[in-house]
Image 1 (cartoon, rainbow, N blue to C red):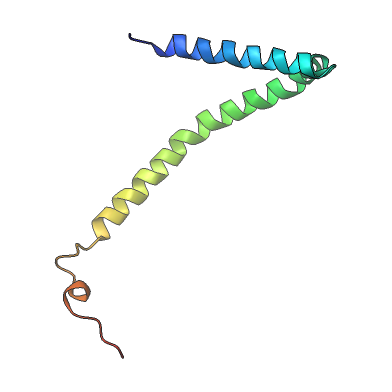
Image 2: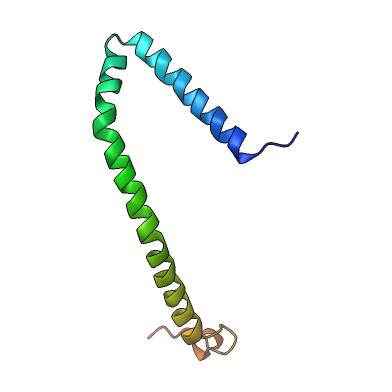
Length: 90
C-alpha cells in the first residue's frame, strides 16, 4: 500500500485533534484555555516559521563553505607522518 505525505499529514493532524479533545474532556476548562491561547500562540508560530525560512538558506551556505574549507585542508591518514610513526612515551 502506498501512502503519500498529504494523507500522512492529515492522519497526524486528525490524531493530534483526537488526543487534544480527549485531554480537554479529562480536564474541565482545558478546551477554553486552548481556544483562548490560540491568538497568542499562532503569531509566534508564524514568526518562527518565517525566521526558519529566512535562516535556513543562510545556515546552509555557511555549512557548505565550512565543509569546502575543511575538505581542502584535510590531510589523509595514509600520508600523514604522525599516523605512520609509533607514539613516543616522552
